[in-house]
Structure formats: structure tokens, C-alpha cells
Image (tube, rainbow, N blue to C red; front, side, top):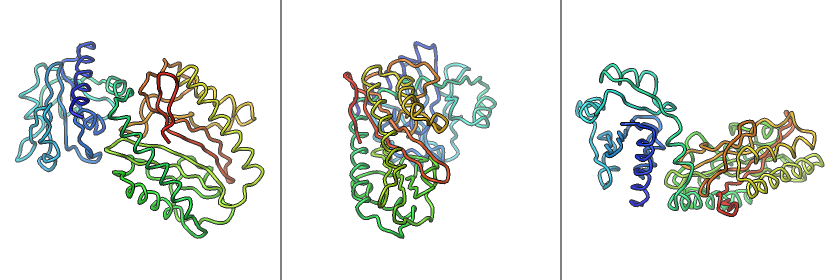
Length: 355
């Protein structure tokens, strides 16, 4: 693990040199886990910060979290507490009056306070860490693969015990418990299991509720877990009973779109063309107006990260080590929805299905 952490830090420092960035303040919890290996890092409180220069790395942590970080050997750890503020340490370690910050994470009030207290100028960056995190190292691939297997096996187990009268929330809780029993460390931040019965399945991001399962209901289950912070993502749609003819037809169309997307992944490895290929299948079937989301997304320490499978933006080929989902779907308001999803690892020859 230590080897991978050193490589990630070195790769990021090379990018700082390439982009003439002297010092970068890292505040995003996923990025802190990426560079330290420590999980979890709170998404609700500022408990850790990293100041990275082209040659040095400083880690500032809350006294409440110090135990989790003190054994790190590749970074200098400073403890925030007893009246010591982040700006006190930054004032010692800043070498210039310009500090780059993560544009997608630091709040306006936070970077304003940094500027006013330290009398510096802050400049935003947005893609460097995202680009580095897109290509997973072997350690990350192992964790994602484990998470995917836990999720897939948990689905099989919970599906067998479904019965009339169970609520969406109860099934969601069963999925979480089963994943944790198999070794998961929780669910991805912002991604509680989506369990949707009947007409609720027509809402792609439905929030599981009190609706009870009935005979012949369509059931859409979209969920995942984390292993040391790394996520899985998996969706299956089925009928708890006898499927209607319409359901059978839509299932066939969506799965054709899915298989077409997988084939495009092998031939081009381009996110935009994968999305376009799936969309063309759904369009030719007469459902262009019902395509309401992209065909997939990257995932890793975050449930949604680069790349986005988006047909309206030309994108370069994905490199080996990228992890994505493929998840086409069709949704009929007031009736039902159908989505089919797997997590896949991009390989030299194409892909490996992880779920």
C-alpha cells in the first residue's frame, strides 16, 4: 500500500511541475483518502487538509482524528488543536503568496478567509486530481473488485428472501446489512440503496420509502457498497411475479442497448461513443424522448467521478485501469422503469465485468 501512496503523490507532484503550480491545498475527502490511504475521512467536517508542493507534502489533521494518521510514513503530520488553526500552519509552510485550491470543494467563505487571514491570492484547479484518479492502480482495482463481488452476492441473497408486504426501506436495510456481513465498510457517500416498487421504478433516483411489495410489482434495485472507501454500483430490474408483455419488450430493448455499449467499449474505448451507441438502440426502438440520463459514469472513491459517458462531448479513449458503469434505462411515468447496470474495468483488450 505504501508503494502505491508514494506513486500517487509523486504523480501529482509531477503534474504540479508541469502546470507551474507551486503549492496546492487539498480539502476534498476522497482526494485526502487517495493520497493518505486513510478511510474514512469525514465528508461533513473538515478533519484533514493536505498542503502539497512540488517537493514536499504536509498533512494537517484534527486532534480528534490524529490516531488514524499518526503512523503514516510518507508525509509530515501536524495536529490541529489547542487553539492552533490551519492558517497558523499554512503561514509557516507557504512559500509564495499564491495558493491553488480545489475549485469543486472549498467553499467561497473558506477561501475568502484564507485570502484575508494569510494575505494571499487563491487560484482554483479542477481537473488534475480527477484525471489522476481516473486510472486506478492495482491496489484500487482489488478494492473495487471486492466491493463489486460483495454487492452482487448480496443482491442474490436478498432477492431470495423478498416477500409481499416488505417495504422499500426494509429491503434497502437488508441489502446494507448483507453487504456489511460480507465485509463492506458501508455505502458510498450520497448513495443509499435505491429500492423502487411498481410505478416508483419510473423515477431513476427514487428515495426508498414505505411502499409495500405486491405480487407482480416491478422491482428496481440500484445499490453498492464501499471497501476501504472504494465503491461498487449495480442495478437489476425484475418482476416479483409474472412480467407483462410490455416489461418483457422493454427488458429486451434495454439489454440490447447495454450489450451494444459493451461492444463499443471494446472497439473504441471512448465514453462519448459508448453513450451514443446505447442511445441509438433506444432511439431506433422509438424511445428517444425517454432517454433521460447518460449510459454511465466513472467510479472509485466517489460513486460518480470521471469519465462521464456523455455522447454530446467528444472524449479521448479511456486508458487501461479506468473503472466505469454501463447503465442504460427507460422510464414510463406512472407505470414502471427498467435499468440494467454493471461496473466494468477497462482493460488493454476491452473490459472485465466486475459485478
